[in-house]
Image: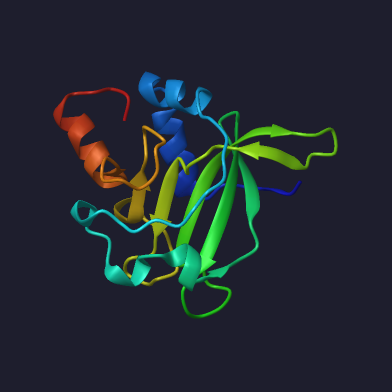
Length: 158
């Protein structure tokens, strides 16, 4: 199993959300199943070019990262220029064998990264959190909106 260092943005994001009890409960209680392509709910504001990215894009080599005691599996997809990820799904690794091979991952991603401005980076406004872990169905929240809401509520867990 290859473990890559996390980008500063992802490390910062998970460092902040590690303290949020609902997310911790979510991370610890995920079930395991296979992933299937979905159409995006209209209320998320994701451009049409990203719809069905799993079926119309190229699946790039996945990798694993370790952040704040969590092992995560990142599955990138390219929609055009091969080798450049346009979308990433990030799953929790639930189990591995003694050789380090992944045996189980969460049913749905913890979050989705969409390169909305096509700059090759995944910034706060391009990260969609799925706190309930039930797939893309319209109850997800963009990271920047979640941070703004928490600041307005006076939360010290940002």
